[in-house]
Length: 539
Image 1 (spheres, rainbow, N blue to C red):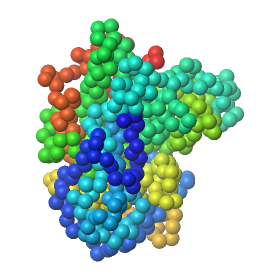
Image 2: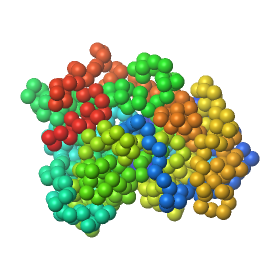
Image 3: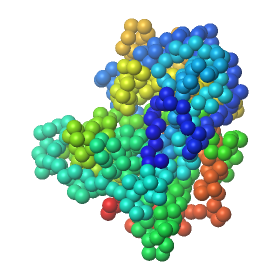
Image 4: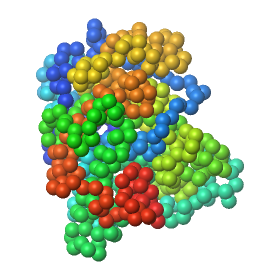
């Protein structure tokens, strides 16, 4: 498998059985309950209409003020996106082979196109038509594919190391302010880039070239692996270098997940013990819960910022002023933005667009562009209106697609999942207070809050929406709430316990102090900041 074929939205082709892993439900009885998959008292068309009306009410005016930020560097947002891709790559659809499926009633498609089927797919039907293209979730399949010995993956490698591209040497400013004097632009000559050819990123998971920060983070993993290869080469037989380097990178990756990233994001109320000691709910080996991938781990969309302190050209102290890199620019410098395409403006990333991980992992005092935004229902306008969505008119905003995907997959309402996790329900008034307060652009409702109340979303709150409200109400938007935190911990620990190569399955407990790789001061690499700075220094 050279590259994953999964996209953010599911495909219409049934997934082949080989090299796949299953999805499952943590709470299958809730998902199979008659009320799952649509609002009470409505049919499919009524449910779809409510979601469309709520989406319209949530659209943001173009003059929306900057979002509130939290004490979490912006890099964590994109590490979580990388992690989500490494866990879940869905292929297949319950819309496939419709004639062969039983006429059991509600939503016939797992694709977020609409609720226009005249039958209801039960849990067994959904799970039999959707598979995970990550055969070993969270074991860096998004980075390595099948490795250099696989004929289809070999093009990604130069021996045991990743093949790299180079940034393009250019005097093209590509600034929003084209009046900036060229001699004030900082160029990183000869910097590495992910390789691209004819508009295609030559990486195992093309989704990781979906925005420039994520693309540069994927590159950092490639560089970290290459440094592991270099460190191991002198003392390791050549035919074992790649496997040992991959094993070492995976241990560092899992350490960051368990000891830095998730402890910084999950609710302390839920994490009463270290994640390494967490006892997850029973799951089939290697299975990813629908509750995780469809709802609990989608909080990152809310953390996306309006602009970023990206590097010396786009951020604090830059010649263009303090605005930073915009979301539109970060989406433009990807394969979807014609990077690497002969018809596009650049074959590789321009060398004044190399990320500065020092800025993205250690924001300056009082600087909001280096931090993640609060986990709540106040999104960056471009996230709701354009960013990351190639079919805006057909499929709607990210908010709409996240909600609709939950109904397609029979996701229980948030209140039911909170009960199942033993978490006290959010009072109706608390849910109301967590809804966006800005004026709605349409004539149906004055605010999203009014729309949510009239449409019944305060009584039956879609799980993804409920989890964002829980984060805002119970954690002040600084962390994920206790219900989603339990589901995330269950998933992460269960996947690690199920794979013999994971950090939690080592015969002797592993710590970064045991690694060959050390930072510039000789200290263990035990934080996301340390990982990213080490990977890219001297690259």
